[in-house]
Length: 124
Image 1 (cartoon, rainbow, N blue to C red):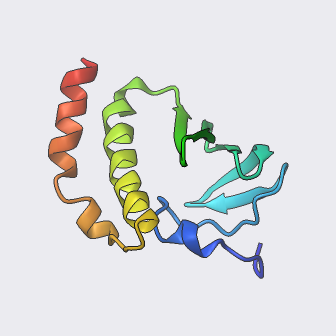
Image 2 (cartoon, rainbow, N blue to C red):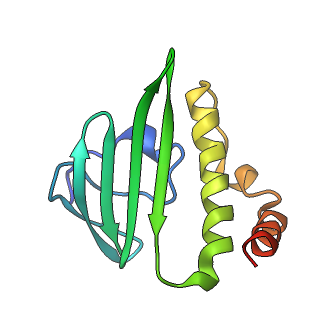
């Protein structure tokens, strides 16, 4: 997929660099796994399958802004706390980006181990 543009904004907060141009049916490689865009309704919906897992970002209007609903479907329950803590750190990066700032990945992950422990207790 060389030569395709990666959305610069995505690279400022997302989990891994993804060389893609989001289009329905688009196939991409990230972290050694193949993914495919399964749903697309810009700017409201982006969903994909990647590495046997499903991901969905959906925006809906809310007053002067919007609400993001994120869904991550995976089979291995033992990874739930790790995934939850990981996504929370990346959403902190997204919050910073939306506020016009930049939060480096290393800074976003400060306290991630404790956060994962709290999720593990919460999830049982």
